[in-house]
Image (cartoon, rainbow, N blue to C red):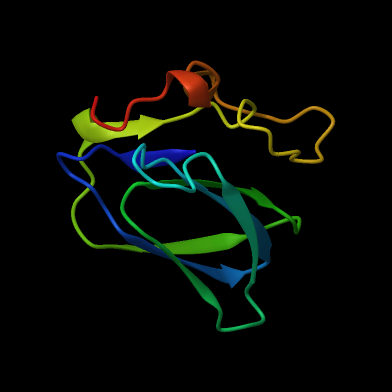
Length: 119
C-alpha cells in the first residue's frame, strides 16, 4: 500500500489498459475521520473506468486476470526518498489469496498502527 509523504504528495489516476485488477485504496491521513478505512475498485480493460487516488491515500492492487496492464497518471514526480507505505497484509483487508507473493520491501513496511505520513 504505497504513497508519498507530505513533502512530495501525489495524486494518481489508475487505469487498467487490459485484463483486470482489484485496486484497494486506504485513507492514511491521520487527521481524517476515515483514517485506516479502505475501499476496493474493480478496474477492467474492457471499460473506460479509471480511479482517482487523492493525496494521503495509499493503494495497492491484485491482478484478477492472468495478465493485466496498468497505466498511472500522477500529479508530480516520483521521489524515492519520500516513498511510504504499509504492509499490505496488516490492515484487515482479505486479499483472498492463499499464498500471496509480496516483495520483501513491502513485507518490511510498517503496520497501519505504526504508520506515520509525515516521516
